[in-house]
Image (tube, rainbow, N blue to C red; front, side, top):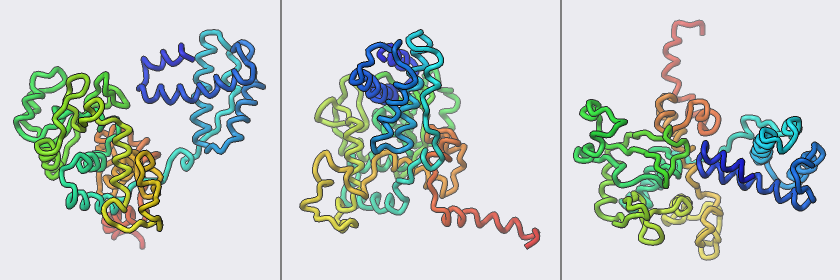
Length: 351
């Protein structure tokens, strides 16, 4: 397992390797419990018994696909290094997923995002929470991308453009034509992007978003550096100077709880006893939304207001097909209404 994980680390993001580790570790522990101490002794019956063990639990088809699919890739590596027979990996039955199995309908709706944004504007303007939520929704960035941002990755006025001159991957002639504001996601060793260097990209911001970030940096950002001497955009005076991805998830879960801004609980809970208001349990509110549903809702909103999927693909660093399969969760009536303008072009057709 360690040999295989070392190979994966040279090709994949650390978060992906960690997910592989947890999936294969369960298989290794099962083997130990079942007395299988040598992969040379592993056979198809053992794989069937492990498969049955997994399916006996309360796991979704998607979870089984991930766990068994990762295990089959691991066993294929084992076959390459002659640790198991070449005929063994195909004997593992990985369940196939339908489109419904592959995706989740959970998202933050544009209506709720607007309510949250207005509440932050009114009660917590230019706070770290305000900027975090605003960028998550406005750019549809992954939490790893938000975590990676430094102050120097924000280009809000003309003086910031100087930082891009003389860089090897920047055409200086283009800089004179670039409009502000924008942020630039950069892949760095200690703050990697999901798709590595291919995830690097500038993302245009609205004037309002640029003003919000500028005010936050000037007034409310904690003026500290992280362990590498970098000025994280989402800084913290506690810990290592850079807000962790876990802390980002917790804060986004909090700001998406309706009760945090004085609204009645839509689930009829008593605010004095609700567990979702306790530290570490924020995600237990049915209305709370973590970064992924915010990204999904933001991508859907972009498409609802007419963004071409090819342009959106570059903005959010996901292929058009991945967007269609995993992120686009439209209200079908609303999407139909957006297409209604095209109906006039059919006026000469047979009714």
